[in-house]
Image 1 (cartoon, rainbow, N blue to C red):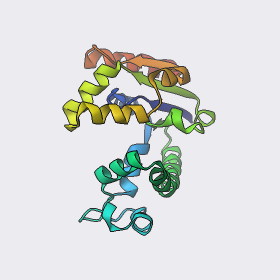
Image 2: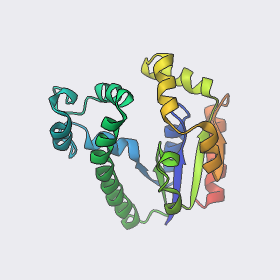
Image 3: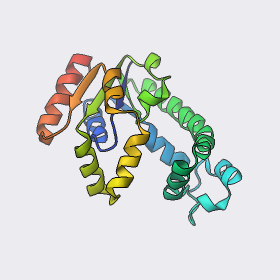
Length: 199
């Protein structure tokens, strides 16, 4: 089974590209979705988060308060590391289970959608190839502001915490440029890549 790492900055269109790869028959392991799952109401990380941070970071329905955690993480890098020490192993275990399920279902390719692929450093050796979805920073800001209601300052702070555009491009085996093109043109680029990759 082939393994593809998919990454890109916030607002790059990575989720759209991952959905197109799934249309082609790939299995998807989405690190962000898995992180949301383990920190959702009743998620396996909630007890440890409550023990580490108290009730202040847990919402009324029992989920991680992502907005308050984001504020704390920006102010206090040590708090971010403590949260990651709880969440990352659980996300990794969930990913392993999904990989085994994809293998059992006979998928020929698994796509790891990993926002922090470049930052983590450990992924490269586990992947057959890295696909980066790229666009201009101004496009990222506009897209994220439009969909989330965040301020430009907040979006740029998130971008600053991610790998730089240059670092992502340096890590790429293939780049799909998703800026100023139609959805059909993007789909065509994804399909050309998928055929070359054997998907």
